Length: 448
Image 1 (cartoon, rainbow, N blue to C red):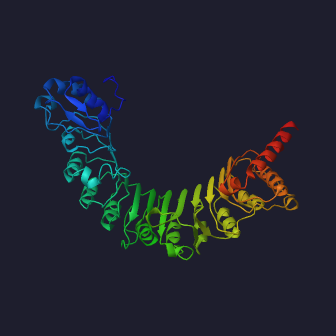
Image 2 (cartoon, rainbow, N blue to C red):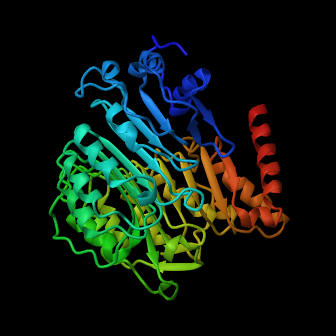
Image 3 (cartoon, one colour):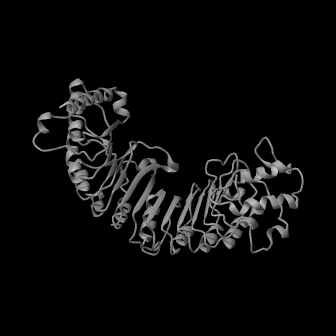
């Protein structure tokens, strides 16, 4: 490691090794650091050579620091990590970060805390990081721009006041908690520069005044019940929204009945949207089989700037007709990527040429189709769409003749595309035959 290289980002592990060489620090079999003796002034001086060049600190199993000698720090207004920009906390064992706070500089712009997948081995956010840690960080690092916290357990109420103190926050993520309180959403909505937010497991019964905040928001992502999600969307007054990604939780008995029309209506307000993802899952992220009815899906025709759309998945499909699909895509002339999972009856694979006529720059298509084709219905017009590069289709093919016809139609529509197949086609071992036929067609075309 060269301390003169200002572009390097040293982690806690790297810095701890400096003391391990002196014999003042050791790492036990559980990955926890322990001091064998008090740190000397010489140890601190050696550390101080490297600290100003640290850009990123990665905290996994961190030793608790004694207070550095005054002659090393020089002034309480200064810090050893004077150029630190990003703090990553992903513990593999219990960490002791409180003692590091006086060492962290005011240049810090980003904090990422991920305890989401290590609950049993490590603990919850309340157990890993104290309120003192967050209070001190909010005082020392008032210009923080990005905060990401993923943790299981309850959301600590004191964090709401900490969030309010970061007036220049641009991106905020709170994920994995049992539920997020209304007060957090309200506090985030008042931040003037916030342009990206990701919220997980919104509490039920969130009550927010419509059009009351999030004035600069451009990207919104959430997971929660439709009622709470709709309330948050109503609260967003920004006209600059370019991306919405949401997973709506449903109760098991709601499958096939709950329509979530209010959420679709709110989404349709954001006419600058370029990317839209709407999916569904059971409570707690559980996989649920079935379909969702959305009577007002056609309201999404107001989103004429869409470039990427993902609606539904193979376990929870959206109930809509082929005609609805074609009407939607007719309103999305700039669309480049489309993934949509509809319940049966699926669109005929041959009829997808209509979809592509509506979306002339489409490059990626993923959906389930009815593989029955008719060559006689295909003639007449030019159906080739060379702009499409990737196609992923699902459903079964029946019989050798059908395999040959599907290959012919797909090659006619997408002569340059890279094809993949969903689970159903793989299961019936028909897709390999389709690929073989298409390969033969392309070889023949190249030899002309």
